[in-house]
Length: 151
Image (cartoon, rainbow, N blue to C red):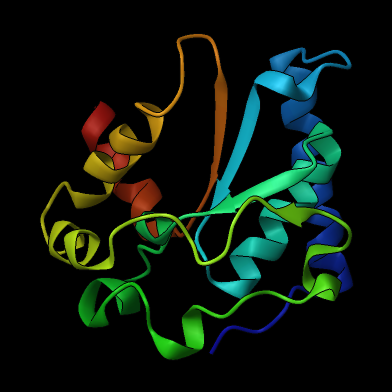
């Protein structure tokens, strides 16, 4: 249901982080960068790969980023989709917190709405000051909602 990243997948995540680092022109100071992830283990592993390449020491799991079609239908805290990832999964990147941030009942209701994921992203962004960079590692369904929102 939530298989771990392969070695190739881990390298792809690190490569994406390196490209993002170059595009953001971060230099050596990652203090203003926060990485959030769906609590699904595979997504957390991807986030850890990206974070490590950005020089960010932690990943913050957020229930609201678990927007896969299964989570939208059955709820964001599915038993198989929300377990603390192993150290092997995170490869040296720490979790900012566990359990993930967010109110499950509110997020479940929001996720069933047409713009639920967009509202969740806006809520996460509101936790940060202007100029801070937030990186969201999530599922394709959420990306599709964001794409429709910005058109």
